[in-house]
Length: 388
Image 1 (spheres, rainbow, N blue to C red):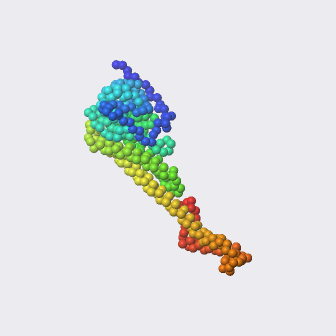
Image 2 (cartoon, rainbow, N blue to C red):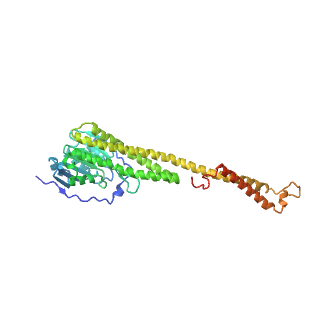
């Protein structure tokens, strides 16, 4: 028998991870009228890399496959085989992989034509699960979303990821290598559960970042609301909506795995899936809570801006009210009627202390009005028009 083409797994290059991350989902569609099963390879997709982990209770083998046919020898054994395809850029490799595993053309279409709505579909010899995997944005905002496809067979699990740079499965790989827990004693359906659980748990760091951003926005909205604050609120609302679209159907898919009996998923694993479903519900509740908080921040922003404008108008009104009588006095004495023509024509213009007395009158009026407004409480929160 000819030995399959195997080679050691090289370390992943993570230098371009920031360049490949995206906060929103890019959509790719088949051309109208295309045949069912047509593969629409995404533009700029990474070349497909095949990584295999074959394990049983007492041993584990981890390799990189140079050809899809190399995994055939592992599929006929009593061990559990996990084939992880990273990248969707090699249509030939994906087609050959479909032949090796006997995949339906529509399965390959769902796997390649991303993004698909998270779902579960049953076929004769395998089970298809579509899920979305998210990661926190490396620039302090947003998140990265990636589709992951699971094809579950009797003793194998085939996973297909969009990109090789970002992955939340490393903890599961370490558990397999170290034989930690019961994963090496269980079948492929337990491996599928472990990976799905890792995907759901990956939502929590993202939500933690959103919680910190919303807390900072809340302080900013109350203390110093600006136009940039409004843009931040709009951005975080759009991102939370995209996050909700990722986790909502994923919860329904997990519920379908639990509810619908399938010979590939044992009753014991469905018990574990219920815990995974609870985590998905918790994630969804947190997303809804954050969305409501973001909506309330918009209302607080509008209220803060309105209150700030009211304080400014209040301050200007107080100042204007003080200067109106002073303007009246200055206007009266600015008419300059000749007192020599009539004793009623402003005799104050000939007084020795006429000008100081006019200024004193203005000061007394201003002080009186200021005292009156202060007793009325109009100066409360109006001493500084720049702060609400």
